[in-house]
Amino acid sequence: MTLGEHLEELRTRLIWSIGVVFSFMVVMLFFGEEIHSLFIAPYRNVLGPNAKFFQIQLMAPVLIYLKTAFMLAVLISIPILLFILWGFVAPAVDPLTEKWGKAVILFSTVLFWSGIALCWFTVFENFLRIFLVTWRLEGIDPFLPIDEYYDLFFNLHLIFGASFQLPIALLLLGRLGIVSSQYLLLKWREAILIIAVISAVLSPGPDVFSMCMLLLPLTFLFLLSAFLMKFIESGDIAK
Image (cartoon, rainbow, N blue to C red; front, side):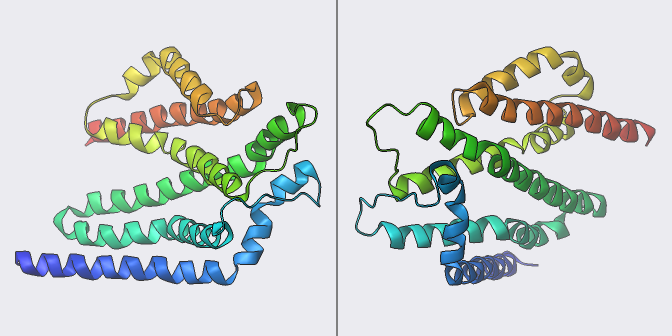
């Protein structure tokens, strides 16, 4: 293929990617009220079913609907987008690398949504309870501005989702020859200490619970990455 043909194919794949995101966004907007009710459930679980939000900005509700629809559309369509873009790169690599690329995309997606699920089911509501109930001072209204709540909601869930990409990063470093499984297993104490510091910085609250909810799975993923890297290295040696 000529350079122009490559650029034309890339343009086509980008148009398809935009179309996928737009389609999901339309669906998310159609179910906007149901999604909003689901997302504010932790807030009402903490403050009661009649808990309200403050609206500070005039356009806050509209912007929240659009932002939520766009964020969900991108997150849901990430594996589809990666497969579309990988289809552009795949012809330039060998069949084994192509298979590994698809496996990495699937593995990365599972890890990302596992991190988000962990935050949703164990961390986020406890984080709200600590700051809105446990540490609330007398005479302070605990209700939040709606836009602040959604910023907090997405930021915390994205932190957990991105943190769970640790195995992907380590395996890629291993394939590039920058680190090895032997080095990771030899330095496991230092690695866990670094993970603990990162967990303390990224965890949503100053409490030990929030830190451990990030520290424990990241430690497990680190050890899993080291053993997976060792398995891959043994296969390379066998070849």
